[in-house]
Image 1 (tube, rainbow, N blue to C red):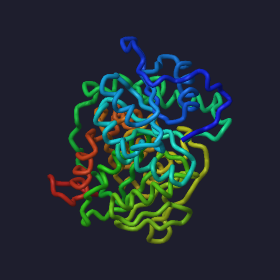
Image 2 (cartoon, rainbow, N blue to C red):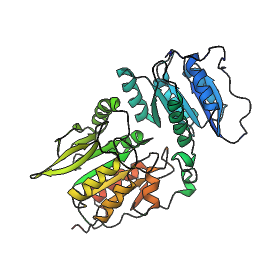
Image 3 (cartoon, rainbow, N blue to C red):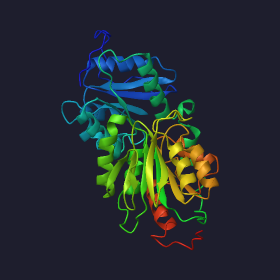
Image 4 (cartoon, one colour):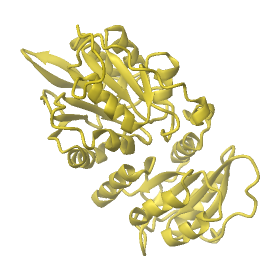
Length: 379
């Protein structure tokens, strides 16, 4: 997509990879059909500590050709380009550069949201909105560089580099005997979490009928698209959890993009409540308030999954849930785009299981009695 910028087009962004890839630093490839956008992003990346340009490309086809011979850590990908386009090319991009993380730079349009959520479900790690003309300012630059550093494994930006290696992942814990029968399944996720969510939710049998509550870090404008995508992936009725939404067995409730999802009782039913109170994590919505409210309202009768994401959101709520008698499972470092959120609960000793998404799904079924795997000591 073409986006205007006050920066001069004379500083042309070349269509070739950088010559030297031996220097330390996070290597970034920029893929966008707009020369202006490539130029702006190139300058932003080059201004960042520990970042370097691996290459630039004006189409997905050229990017794939470069990636075959160009070591790259993070790919900034526009989805709406001439030719094959970023979305259609994403599977081949991920196959060609399996160790690279993809940051989708998305437009503000409805189509942009649809394509971005689809890309995230396919394995893109994160998204950032492409600003309107004049929006490439210092604040945008800091946000962009922060995401690149986290995806590239820079511990200072929520991507614990040491924990990102498989060797640093704690040994998979055995599932602790369940102390309290879960009444809900609560899932918190951020960067890389949508792909993991799809892996957890697909193929859940009809016999698994716990309500599923999801807090996923996304721009508010993307939440309706995300809810539709989750409904298709899970085959379950999915609601955006507004004030007073009833939590029903076998259905999914998703936090709005403009408020935290809290859980309270109304007679014999569980219902959602929204809150815009600032969370310590700074996230909106935040996983912590969801888990804290569940710990209190359900008195620990809950199971939580913490999936891929930067930062520590979910750690405080998980501590309250475990203290109340609930259980927490976490995604492992090897399969996480960023092992910040699941790493925080693991390092705190709160996770009774650390595993890839597919194993988490099987563990959820075992833990809730859908698939028998040992005796459960319910209370």
